Amino acid sequence: MSAANGERLAPETFRLPVARLREGYYSDAYFVYTKQLLEAERHHPHVVMQVFQKQQSLLGGIDEAIAILKLAAGRLDERGEWVSGWDQLEVRALREGDAISPFETVMTITGDYSLFAHLETVYLGSLARRSLIMRNVAAVVHAARGKPILYFPARHDHWHVQTGDGWAAHVAGAIGVSTDAQASWWGGRGVGTVPHSLIAAYGGDTVTAARKFAQRYRHEMNITVLVDFENDCARTSVEVAQALGEDLWGVRLDTSEQLVDRSLLDQMGGFDPRGVNPRLVHNVRSALDEAGHPDVKIVVSGGFDVRRIERFEAAGVPVDAYGVGSSLIRGQNDFTADVVMVDGQPCAKVGRHLIPNPRLQLVD
Image (cartoon, rainbow, N blue to C red; front, side, top):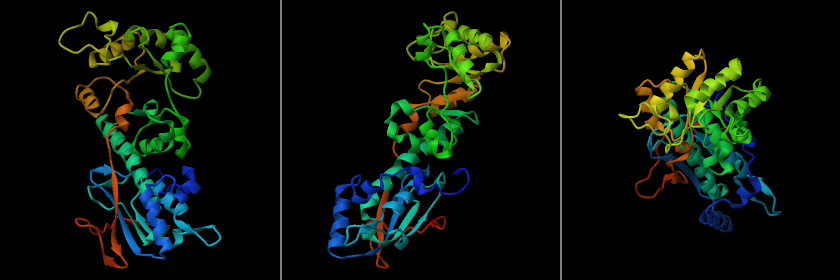
């Protein structure tokens, strides 16, 4: 699993706030003080900085971390003009999407520490966030056994993280993202469904909202319609399918975990009937098939995570795609950076030492 063409993303892709990075605005203050002290003392230790994390994971954010070093490593000269330090550093790194093991070295930075001491906070943060997303998405992709995963957590987090998170999800195997920002780094577009709010705007009439939506956008996307507005997914799915015909790609079930769909009222007993459950999906699939719409896909969403997808797949529930949201941005995947060599000699805090990794590639 790796980035689409095997090439690293160009630094300009990330639209980094370069001036702010150079001045340490986003960095822990003690790293900024460290850089200032080394420069004031004209002390320029030649170090090897080693970066790793402690989980079985996928590596995300490495191209962003490299871009940070390329654009913001350096120093001010006597005239107050920025002099890049990139050419004085040797950086070796793994690739976006590489599988990584606990404590495996993912990047080394070799050179004058005063050139990049102020950047540790930001490059580690990029690695931590993007690797978290990548690992989480890869897990649900695996659980879904090849069925499409739609990446839908945009509403659960700050808008500013969308671009990089969308790229990480893409590399990890998500087949669709919900915003143009999430798709921007590979030139894609956001995808979605006819939302509840549009249905409400048409007086709660799902068919009318779906028909209007399809008339305008059927040539731009696969038309998928939320069908739980009236809490009768099987009936609404058939009505939408009959109204849209070949313009309909799929229906999406998003029933609240506090509700029981009307199609289940005569089937109660022996299972939890709330929310989007296996019996509800079977009911919708049967209703569509019996009405002559076997090609209409079923997308499920609403609280899905790895374990829930695994249960659905193990039970053979006729789901065609999973929309997954907040679970994909939960958890942690922290990275650590340590100086492990100074002026050619081992020098690290107790418990840390240089761990060579032949998989690291020299970065141009």
